[in-house]
Image 1 (cartoon, rainbow, N blue to C red):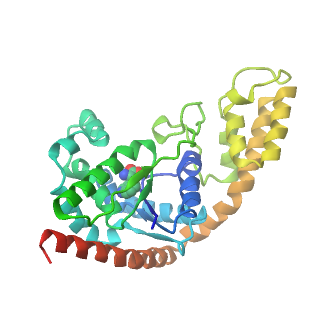
Image 2 (cartoon, protein in one colour):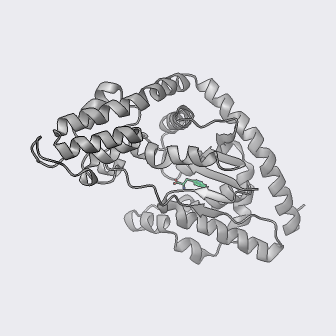
Image 3 (tube, rainbow, N blue to C red):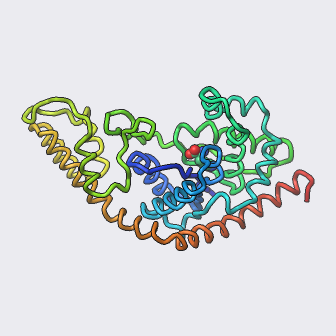
Length: 321
Ligand code: TRP
């Protein structure tokens, strides 16, 4: 059975880049798998977050966001990593399969080590917990961004090493990188990213959304001059929110000469059309933390059944039954 699984780190404000580049494609992808598990990687967040109130809020923010964007918790198991404590037992077993040299070479760890002195063992063993997240549920495909590809390959290595040592017990996962996903441009033309401070927050109220869209950087061509859609971030974003016919209409307006203010107005209109109903759903979901807890607990309960089965196989294989 093909099983897709991914972890979502509960860190900070979600923005349009996350929505278009990660959330929408992952929700679409779930529809093509017999089984899918999407979880909130709350214990992974502990490697970098040390404010309980912030973490708590971010967990609910991220849960409400994915549900508002269309994650269906009936068909996709949606849960908190921390709610299935079995993952730590498998983490230890996999840690014993992980050569130190392999972890030394992990990009995320190397980057953290290059930039700060206080790298903790959590950051160092991050890929082992991530491998356990994946392997515990027999996942075959892991949709992630390019930055996480190496971590999924490490998970694959650890599963294979376990199997070579103890017999064919674990499913070796593969990264599922969607190559079509282009980089979403931010306000200044660079990739939309919190570290560049150029994001459009996903849940910005309409007036703020409009204000930010009006700030998107353009060139200084005068209104009447024909414009190149391929070189325009506004067009790029428009196309991701508009119907194909609308995109062709805007293309024609570009050729005829359109003022940047009008192009931005058109972009704001299609963005608001899509986001307004999601924003309302988000607000309602986010206001009901007990409701979110219930959804996540139900997902965890179903996930735990699979986790227990995997651990039974693992314990038997290694001689701890
Ligand atoms: N490391 C991932 C990230 O930073 C989050 C994550 C944790 C994850 N466990 C996972 C992703 C398992 C995929 C599978 O985004």
